[in-house]
Length: 262
Image 1: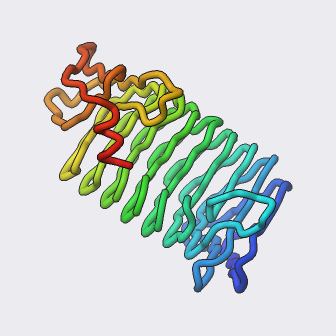
Image 2: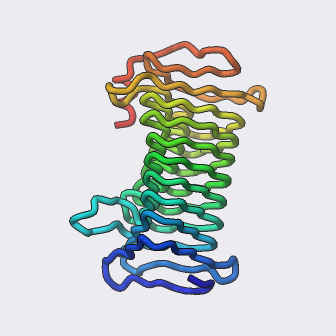
């Protein structure tokens, strides 16, 4: 699909493809996929997909009865590359949901989202430069995936900037969350290494806990290369935060943490 193309949803239908698609927009002539009425969605599966300079605007989620999917953009069992792309004003449960895929993201902006912005379920994610603004739920929600990332920034996130759960593993550097309910949540058997961070005016900065009883405790390892960066935190029993090779103490019952966020 060439630069400057506009795809407009008149009806609440889904674009479904198991064939490879490259969306080749440019900075001056992006591809725009949109509706006027918060309708329409994409389901892309079992192939290779690339988004370069694409704007998604006012999408919804699939209504097909045989497909239980929640994203405006749904990518399943695929290889996907997302570059210089924006998702604006999504009314779906996830603005974009990537499931069991190999995904690479560079320069993705997500703004004015009714629920979660980016939802990664299993598979792998490599990212550089994710920006979230005005998100009613989570900015980046990771479940069971392996993640390597550099730079994620979010403001006015009503739930979690980064949610890292269900045995997810990863390393992320350069995070910045401000004016949000919670910066980073690591939970349910997950293991995250974090370097270089900034938190400002959040209700909570870091929480490590168990949400689901079937999982073991979670671990967050922090390398504070900033020297004296401060953050507030909560740690559930049987979970841990290791900061500069020292375990933080002051743990509370996981039930108390769950009551704060669920």
